[in-house]
Amino acid sequence: MRKAQSMSINTVVVAAIALLILVVIIAIFAGRIKIFTGGTQDCGTQQGSCMDKLSCPLGNNVQLSGTNCDKQNLPEDNPLAETYVVCCVPIIKQ
Image (cartoon, rainbow, N blue to C red; front, top):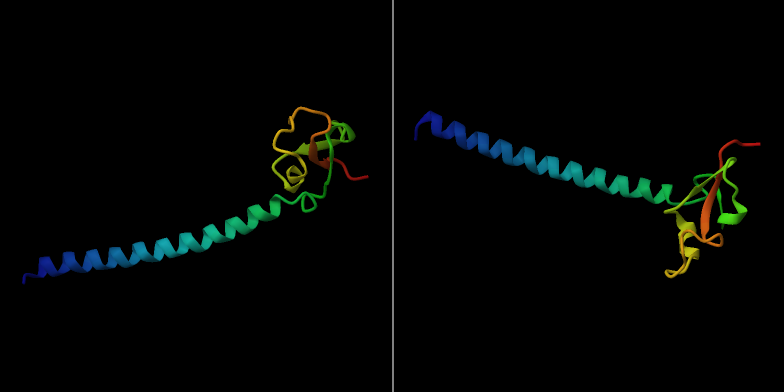
């Protein structure tokens, strides 16, 4: 076996090990990101409260969707209706 052939096999083995380590690191960080996004979906974590759109006036508040408040709405509810429940977060703390 020539030296050039053994060097290419070593390169392939090292590259395969590096790829395996990279996959493990990505899997670890993907799990951490899932934990982070779970926390951002909680209206209380955003310092807001669940209420219908009519009770959350715009200007002083932001209406967030995609939070745990959405679970209070039925699938057939219209997101544009005033009774649609959103996460109401005050812009300025008083």
